[in-house]
Image (cartoon, rainbow, N blue to C red):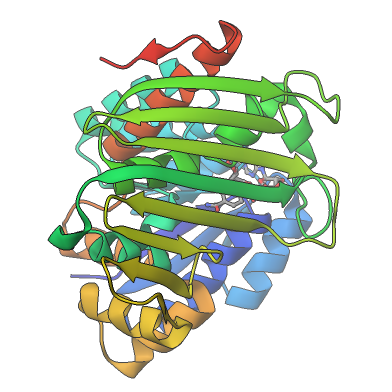
Length: 358
Ligand SMILES: NC(=O)c1ccc[n+]([C@@H]2O[C@H](COP(=O)([O-])OP(=O)(O)OC[C@H]3O[C@@H](n4cnc5c(N)ncnc54)[C@H](O)[C@@H]3O)[C@@H](O)[C@H]2O)c1
């Protein structure tokens, strides 16, 4: 089989992250792929990526990449409102797709995109990167301990500075036509997905949103209350603030009848825990990394290096495509998170009324 030929569309903040990972994985021979094309509406940005990665094809026209017979798979890393058009075209052309989260600015578009990739039977992955977070993967495995009893509550607090400044180049994030809404959809779709992962199916939500910075229809505070089908509850507080010097942070606490877990770092931990009558303890970062690699079956040293530099998200996407398997997380999984986000917004619009999920 010839190597899988990849085209990357959108050479901004997150495009750079994937571009580095692609180069690193190919250079180390961990995936059978070729980085074949880059595209950005800014020629300068596209060229800067191509020069570093020695990519032969550089263009400002995304359809050229998608339609090219020399491209098998595309990374879609443009602002959120641009995802749908590119995903639909790539599905129509039978290309494998990796699309950044959120898939689109509204649920109707997401449903159309999910239907399109399903009808085209292409391998379609989504950038819900926390599904590849070592600390949350290890945390999930720890919560499967039967001594814990039932999950009672999850508290998640996510704060980052309004991402139109600092190391973000995404000025579009305060323009609702490009972003759809604010911190809940654009950023905390990650959190909603993690809450569903850790807590199970959600039967009802309530929500509230506020707009402090004053960007029209782009909320910078979202509060959500999720009721899990099994009875536990979760609270999410998502904030886009003004303090450039404070890095993005997620604080997560899980309360069980007989246990407690807490972590302040969304990638490597540590995890603080207490199970039953045991004294409180801490799983340090190194142990989180070790257990994660063991859980995902990648124990050799080279993966530890990849994990530290790029996360294993791109490795898993590329491996799924080259193995003819389904990428994870996929579009249907993202659709569930979008359904929850949509329900939270509907509750907020209705003044915080409970919204039941079918
Ligand atoms: N998974 C994550 O944790 C994560 C983190 C940041 C951003 N994102 C998502 O990634 C997407 C991009 O965000 P970003 O922060 O990288 O934005 P960005 O503004 O830094 O980069 C977007 C790039 O796309 C280019 N572009 C716009 N329209 C284009 C088109 N039609 N064809 C080609 N290029 C085009 C822009 O010129 C820009 O260089 C958004 O959906 C965002 O939500 C995900």
